[in-house]
Length: 178
Image (cartoon, rainbow, N blue to C red; front, side):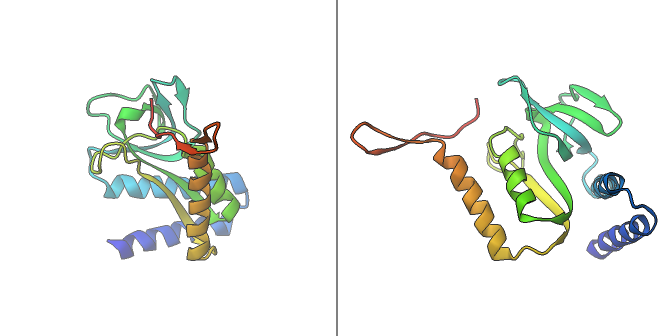
């Protein structure tokens, strides 16, 4: 299955790169290829789209997400037009950003735009665990650099919940979604 998946991706990429020079269209095609393959490989109970997650408790939408994996068994999308959806946090099982080539600045940006938002809960994991991914067709960033960037960005987020008392003692506040 992995070989077939890889062959399909390669064939689609080769074709689009040979004929199309419009960067936004190429990017859309890269996202579409992956969504189509996910639809083929995921269980039929899961749907794949692109769009936004609406947090009904905070009354805010997530940033735009290239791939949303969700279930509409018990709650239909708030809005659906083709592959474009706006879904409630309760139905999301995973999200993914798609990059033709992942750069360190894009990784930092993706972490920054998703880490503070409720991106849904993966029902196969412990409650509260979010399944957030990045799929890069090409990545020249070393693994150690990737880990360093992830660590820095998560630490920046956690620092927002730290404070000091008047006498200089560190206080850490819990992180949860309301």
